[in-house]
Image (cartoon, rainbow, N blue to C red; front, side):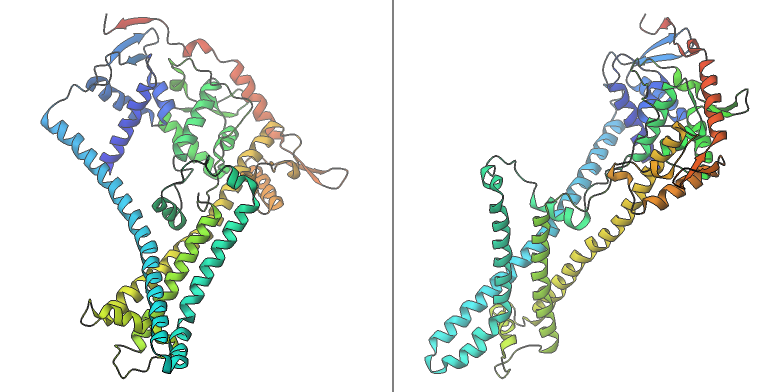
Length: 496
């Protein structure tokens, strides 16, 4: 596992260098990868050796790394080539395995649906043919044959009704047929089915890295200094979790706590200021990135409805065949064929030509397997939907906490609970009043506010200590000497 993590970290370092063609320092690569400072130092040294980096030592003592000769490894031995080949094979096998699994799900869903529809159609045809060939027993045949097809005919009727309703809905929207030819090609069916069952990729899958990069960018934009309330706003962490988290950041990125003249604790990250990247990292206020909500599926609603209908048909047929196989067993010439047993009897007859005893195939292949698959096909997305609601609710509160902390920090002397909820849907949990009250109480555990009432009787909170900390931080930043973060001129160049 450690080797996998190291390979992934090394890949991130190389990608960062490829996007920084004019050269970069350790601070630049740290800001782009959000990897710990010590890890970046180690991996940059490995990359510099493998790809023959150009080293330029500046007056500040910082090294500027660049790769004018490209990224062609100097290692061409058998073991190195074998290692790269194995990595490509593993990656290819993972992609192939995922694709096969998606195709298998599609094959099970669509394959069983087509098979059951063919069985139903064959039963209907045989029933009609049987009733037509024996005019003396027409009424009897209709009772046992066509009457026995009520189950399958209702399935056909349901599918036709849903299809007609779908087409009618589309026709009411004139744009559908006007733009039908201009619409881009849809996603493959196996991907759409997989999306319905298991959902899509997590939109916040790289969140830890994105959040660290935003914190680093804020630090670099503010003289290498950050306070705990600012860190809480950027990360959405309550005070009891933010305190150990910022100390962890200090360990990762070379930060040190320091007290101002007023006794306020700030955190300095001087190593992150030694940058070659001239990109402006200034912030407009204290803006925090927010998480995106997870969607149940990227499919259109009518497509998911169709998947549900098809799976419902499979579930109905699977239950039907499994129930009859377990209760009736094998059919003989003496077995009475009632109305509800006719499709089972026709299937038994059809597969008698392929199997000496078709009962095991009907029990397992047409009964148990599609029955279990259909239940899981509904159970998995059903449980995922319930979990998704709770996860999105937690995301909304975390996002609102960031915005709320930011608004309190912006104006700590006059805070009203009603001013905290933003208009962004991703930041509005179900109970806004309770969420706002919780946010104020959380921040109140860090800096206790004074409470007064306005003209309407609503509480107004004054975070006096927070205001003093903000003023002390502003004064501290204004006293910093920006020249200490300058790289200076190049005093040594490995390429002359």
